[in-house]
Length: 257
Image 1 (cartoon, rainbow, N blue to C red):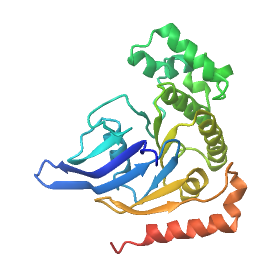
Image 2 (cartoon, one colour; image 1 turned 180 degrees about the vertical axis):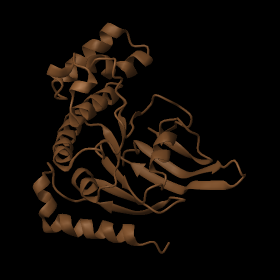
Image 3 (spheres, one colour; image 1 turned 90 degrees about the vertical axis):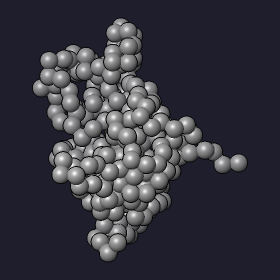
Image 4 (cartoon, one colour; image 1 turned 90 degrees about the horizontal axis):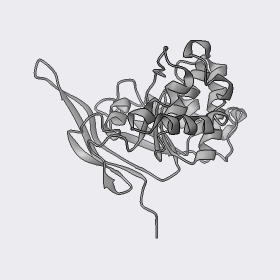
């Protein structure tokens, strides 16, 4: 008997009414099924509603129609059941890294001392052990992203939503962070939904890639990534990787729908 999906997005529509009365359609009949422990990337044209979908899953916005199920239970308008890391790290400059990474736990009413203990327990795993008493200004972009991800992971939700976490990093730092994220995912076993505009990044990290159409977005194609794990950056020059990249490029360039 097959296991139920960890996360299901079922017939989701999202419309906005503009001030002039025009209906702005963002998502249209969007369907996704994510298994527990999967790493799934979302790619598509800019403005196709990928971040909007994350807002719906995390309960920050309501869909116009459809349902979102976590462990077979609807989570529409329910906050705190998944962990969401937006594009920017949003570290508060007046708080130390330790104080920043426990912020989500504090908001969840976890006692401060318990929150600090949890954070310090994972500090070495996230490569932050020596930086916990520093302020964000002392950290590189990659280290700041590690701190933001630790803050997200400490909420201890099974599902992590990562919205272009490495988009602002230089290429070399980005490659290091990709490998680091894969190592963390293998240790923690979370289910990850990952938004990226990098085809290479989507292939390197993912079990499957959902390709979104232009707005109003729907799922245009699902591409399985059969590359063996553990993944290494050197795979990016392999024939299999290049074949997958060609498939995704063709899907993204096909605007006939």
